[in-house]
Length: 64
Image (cartoon, rainbow, N blue to C red):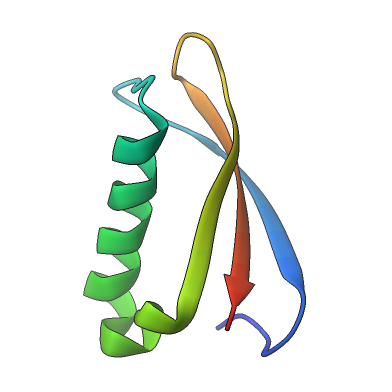
């Protein structure tokens, strides 16, 4: 699990591609909730960059 302080930056490839940042963010949040339960509710996910074709994303993950 992520540490209690600081930011973590992750780069992902997305398949199938999705060019909507809000949809990608929602998918991240849903995956965290499914994997870690309510603990994931205390994790911020910010989409910092989304490739024009929607195939890659850089996200900042911050524990509250």
